[in-house]
Length: 388
Image (cartoon, rainbow, N blue to C red):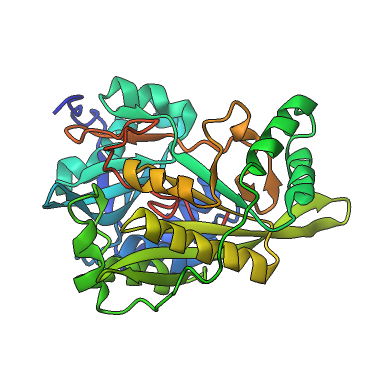
């Protein structure tokens, strides 16, 4: 395997999983050194769900480690466990998150030991989604493969282009007028129409393991999206309420999962509501016709809920090509697509790209993907879809 892991520094540094009964120590460290009022500190149940409740994790501790120099905590990393489905083979895998080393210990090798700990000590594959651009050079130096972005699709709500124009202006007040005009023209290119009767939704139940996941198993590299995973990821989420639909076609199930959120903007009076967004986090069609049916369900939600837009991030080649038959439009390939905001609590004009890193021997997905690309990542993988 490329990028050999260095031995421990001469000073005694221990790296250990956090026992369930000592989660408060990890939460305090994050709150002190990562961010004040960190979401895990405010919501210990989200921490427990992320690092303790996954059906892919079977140890008594949390899948979160602390590095100690003597009695002092000097670093941490979390690992969200999942079962990696890779060409018919199941492997234990981790999405690394919250990688932090105190400044005074940098250069000691602790950071490198942390980012690879789940591999070296537990034998897990590593797929880092949503990495910080500042540490990309480290990943490259250690042999990881960088994936610069995911594809992003947006579906405007009925009559929402004037509101989207204002949204883009609020997020990027300095964006040149021609760039704003070009982005709006792209968003309005399909008119947002769809037949709301095409998508006949059914609830998710145990039949997914017979008529859903097995049909995708030969087409997907990524998290094994069987019923246990979907139940944990969506129905048992402690803070977000997701809607899960399946649409049957010829004895197979397509899958659609989404949630809605209120867009807020900062004003002199504080946070003010601006509109609503529908965040699609699973779009698994069995055919182009099925994709149209799933897209029609999204369009129906936009219309019925007076929602400003829907968006969806993905990497799969064939499934994404079928999105072209729906009212979704792809924005990441546009020269100005990154100007369409992605953070809404509150509205933030930061970059909407999602760079990632894959640890060999796994072969990373291409970006932009080829038609045969089988990696299936979405914004619900890792900790990408969580509160701020």
